[in-house]
Length: 424
Image 1: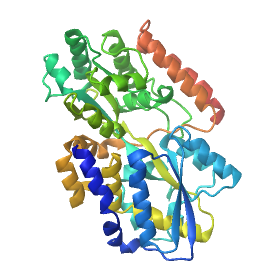
Image 2: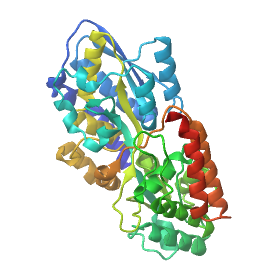
Image 3: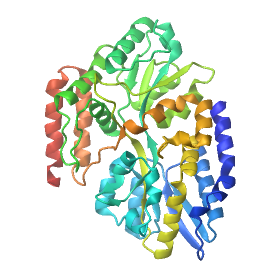
Image 4: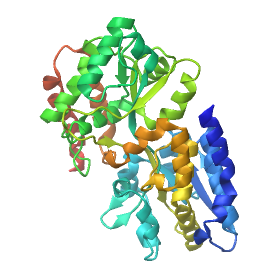
């Protein structure tokens, strides 16, 4: 298994790389910093190896990592902060960053850098935008994904489609999905909706050129012609028979089991898709479909890191850790081992990354989309659950297809904005 061997080589690179990065070395009296995360399995091994390398390069600092499931990480970090338990560096889901900025004592990393912010320059500016507030930066990217199209080349061939020519546009995606269903009897394809339908809706309308939420998250604006047209595509997927009405888990299971033609989901699923397809079907990976002539704009999924250390020694140690993992070699090593999208500019300038891509070409579309990735829209402090419930109800009505998107979407946006009105 190619990606397994690459991962093993990556994980054993460890200390040799760390020792070559002496610029981040930090020496102090014994200081323990606490790092909250949601990485498990092989991803945890990759993360812990990087933390161990950091400790080896920084005498006197230890990193205590605390795990919580991705669905629970927000609540766990909130509870720890409220209870006064140690939290120095925390993984924060992207769409929750504004809430954390407004309701927790996060530390501005620019201010904590004592004027030396060159370490932040390696990140793509669009990746830092999610954590930017004026001149301050409160979050740096760490576990980012981008939505990709995965497809089954064997099913394409069975349906008479060219396995080497995946759909490039939404019109082609709909046509290919319909053909697959008609010719093979299998589901043609689906698009993840994620929790409450929030993320999937955002990606669809953003890619079509619409605005999902305004800048401060207090008003939905995807009832524009572009947003309505994008969501009409989702209804059309149900109407033409290519997409069975189901959950993300069911769609993912069908695709991974070789029983669905196409599935649009996060690049974070790449390694799982490669593993699932091995000896079962030939996997294809392509960029997110374009909407007409609009340039591709896709929202990142995943999480960033925020700084919470208030004690001077712990803050200095935490900043040393953040600088360490922000170096191109370390950030790219994390990307290779975990499967998350590279977040450092020009990743292929790193010979190790270039070699990895040559041996694992599935990741090429992911790297292509780095510059086309825009920040996830974030919700305000009040009315979010009610607003997301309205979006979930909108999707259910779209898929029921008793009325067109042109009637359903404006009504849903009005209900979402009523739920968010308390923030104004």
